[in-house]
Amino acid sequence: MTSNSKQHGRRRGFTLIELIVVLLILSVSVALVMPRVGTGWRRLEDGDFLQQFVDTIRRARLIAVNSGQPVAFRINSADRVYDFAKPANRPIPENVEIFSERLERDPETGDFLVTFYPDGSMVGNSFDLVFDHKRTYRISINPLFGTVGVARGQT
Image 1 (cartoon, rainbow, N blue to C red):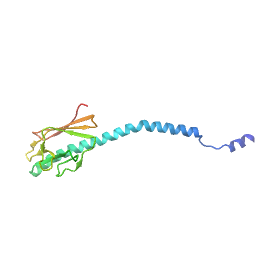
Image 2: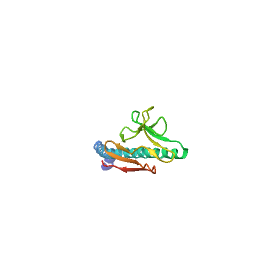
Image 3: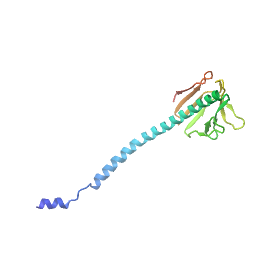
Image 4: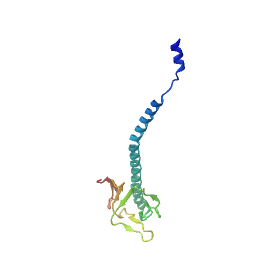
């Protein structure tokens, strides 16, 4: 009967040390996993921006061919926006730098331009997009066919 009374007197549950050990294990696990999740999330956002940027260039050319009017793909480096609309309104993320040579410049807005004409030809150049000063992508626009290609550059 004495052993029965001892069991009823004990409370069931976790000790403070057990709780601290579990919390320590959880915090170490989170600390190890979070940087990888953050990096993966950033790359998803970068890939989404890259895809939208290329799609906007392709759409500008398509609209020029279908409408019979020249259409300009615009980049405004001061406001960090791009689009074929005037004024450009699609944001360029802060971690992205865009480089190109021999682009036209709109004297009215200061935008850099790649102009597509109804016959499919263009005046413009390729772009280098650099993400976080590490990953570079070359966006090439074929001046004869107007096709847009993306290639991973050297890092």
